[in-house]
Structures are given as C-alpha cells and as structure tokens.
Length: 113
Image 1 (cartoon, helix red, strand yellow):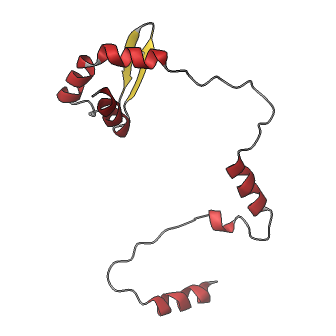
Image 2 (cartoon, rainbow, N blue to C red):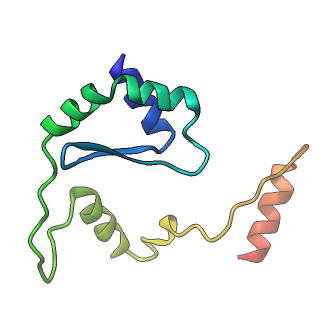
C-alpha cells in the first residue's frame, strides 16, 4: 500500500520530508491530483513514521578534493589515452525518418572527417 504510493510519488518527482514532525511535500506544479493528495492524507502517519526512521546520508566534511569513485577513475584513465575522451563527448544527435542508405551516410561522414 504505502510502498505503491511512494513508488508513484517518486515517478512523479514528488519529494517528501519530515520537518519538526510534519510532512512536507515538494512537487512539480500540477502533479498533485486530488486522488494523490487523498492517498497522501490517508497514509500521512505511515509516511511520517517511515521517513523518520530512515537514516539520512551524512554530510561530508569540506575538503580541497575528494576521492574518485571507481567509475570516475575509469573515465579519467580512458581520457588519458590518445583521443580517449572523444567517445564521451556527444556534440549532436540526429533523428532520421524513412529509409536510410547506410553506405551513403558512411561515405558522407568519411568525407566530413
């Protein structure tokens, strides 16, 4: 029940938090329908209890620099190779409609590069 409501709220980008024992809601304009508001009211006490028992992520101490995650370290390593970071730089995207002649497109790109 309450899990479904939380999943629905997350998918709608609705934020919930407890401040001084009260439930606070942050939602994009027009997101909260009367039905969703009724569901929140119906499960208000359960939501407050659930959010109050959740451990919040502690704030890290301010530092000059921070340790990289493994993903960040991997991207940095790849970027050190010749043209290593080119694959992660997407400057444009194209959407083609209808039939596409791949051979002609490939030749056109080769001419450009």
